[in-house]
Amino acid sequence: MNVGRVDLNLLKYLDVLLREQNVTRAAEQLGITQPAMSNGLKRLRELFNDPLLIRTSEGMTATERALELQPLVRQVLAQTELMLTPDELFRPSDSRRVFRIMTSDYAEATLVPHIVRRLRAEAPNLVLDFVTPSDVSYTDMEQGRVDMAINRFNEIPQSFHQVTLWRDSFSCLLNRGNPTAADFNLESYLSAQHIWVSKTGFGVGFGMNPDKLGGLGWIDQALMRIGRSRKISIFTRHYQMPALLAMNNDLVATLPTRVARMQAENSSLVIKEPPFQIPEFELKMAWSALLHHNAAHRWLRRLIQEEAEQIAALPI
Image (tube, rainbow, N blue to C red; front, side, top):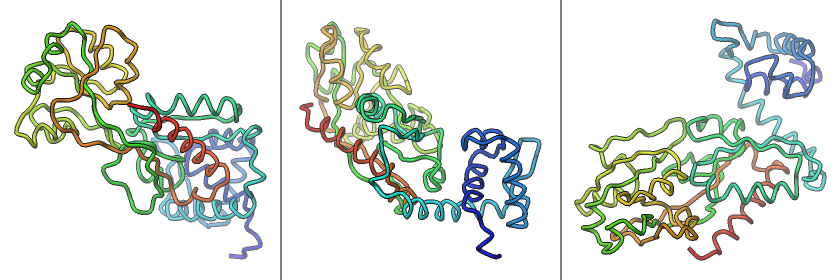
């Protein structure tokens, strides 16, 4: 192949086409017409001597050759952007870039409002697309389809860059009229009915099974270590729900402390320290090596870290 024939715009076309696997959506993302994108796909097929995308009953599907090219194309584009886009040329106030960020419900409740408030002031034209852990995979992260992930990770591929944003403990949230609140100890805690919030990992939502306590998360694993278990009556996938449900005078919610403290002004609820030891956890931000040197990406990572530092400095 004659390298002089390669148009870098074609590689950008290929990157978006393989990500969207749809000519119309790819054209919309790049701000060109569908005929122009179709012509770009035709030139790409000639360049690589491969159909790249073929039409099936389920839509456009990437060929084996296209899947081999995808990470290579992402790397070339990332390196090219690094060379051509120095820091001083990225102007947040003018940028219309779309950032796709995977956030856990915990991060959405505690960190995201601060990020959005800051961005509305400094980069009002930026677009944020928040997705859940079950919406994406490590492959999406690795190939740059997702800009970053903000979550609690048990493990993460070593190829990713990561930083700890803060550490958090656990607290119990319950109605002041709950009989358990008057004499809050391990036995009264275990005799109460409990609200459970799921932990969700990349690409899969962990289902609930009261008979498998080890799979229910940090709280139940901590109880299991002392040979005890709690009675779970409500399972939910959202951190906003337990505060509402704890208004019932017979339910106890055990939540990350920063989430529980968001209800500190609710006079109907009381916050208690768990009557047993639950290990703290870390909220982390992770991103692909492909985006590590990207100027816009670096700017957003700094902003998120600055907001996280201010939150971490607040008493909990």
